[in-house]
Length: 376
Image (cartoon, rainbow, N blue to C red; front, side, top):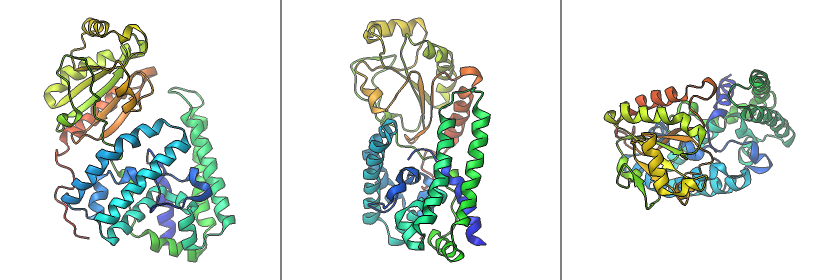
């Protein structure tokens, strides 16, 4: 049956990182905490711009909106769920307002369909969609219980650290819970409801393959002291891949990454990669610009370093720990980040980042939608 294929394929889409909803205001109802919120993520993807048939002019205007809302979106990721959800809902409303003003009804309808796909089977927990297909409260409650079991299993896995011996058991638990949720998708929908849902969803679209799903990188906050460079602006680094790392010079875990940062600066600069260190103090000594300079010289850190004495850049990026590395593409979008030592307990996150950088360097400097016209 067509819908079974759609539902089974759609459940996998639960893995899209970061948190979105429906037309303003979204009716998520009592199961809001179980419903993935991916609207902000998917509208950042060039593949979605192409699917919607957005013109270059539309994309440029949409990116102006991103420049206004992305810093709040990114910083919200570290907030408690209720605060984060409120901010995301507000920003989603601004996205829908923009689409209502600047796009055709068919483009808006398709965006709604793509959001449904990004939410996978959890879309059935939405009040608005449940009403459309006549899903009864009892069936929705059963689906919510299965979704909750998956969420609990995911949380157990997320609470582990690299190398934790419990990881295989938690992975098995998550696999079983996910399979049970998948089976529930067809168990609790009648054939008629399945057909209705198939019509609502439209052509299948795999949001797990989207590559650019994070915000524009925050602009560097002005500070008094920079090392090894004149003050830089993220906007001025467009056309280059930027590796931003937060550190504190007395942080042992940060020292474990210094060799890698030096290698990146030496080997990648000629390829169009800029390494930028942000020294945010943790101790009183780290609040002394001269001490920061001396430590950088001792460690032979020759890349640009922003001395973030008042932690303003730390706050702007919503950073939470030393060290953290962010990968920013040539168009200024965050594409990946890693917290902690890059080689912690055998991890090879430096290689992961280097492989990503290689891919970003060969991406066209123009957005993937450069040849797209409004054809839909």
